[in-house]
Length: 79
Image (cartoon, rainbow, N blue to C red):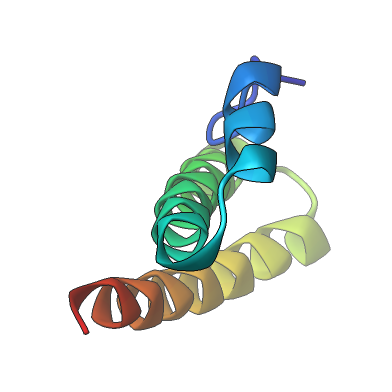
């Protein structure tokens, strides 16, 4: 699964597990932003290449909601 866009490596997950406090929070948010960006990439591919209208509609929703969540996480990182 690490070949999927935005998936974290085992090493990164271990690094996150050993972090605490604000270091954990910052690492978690940064990793989740990357994860959401991967979801957007896959959703855009589905929108461009998908044949099932329901899956294309879902991909549009995923892109919109994940983009909103990325902005929220970036705001949290900046605060």
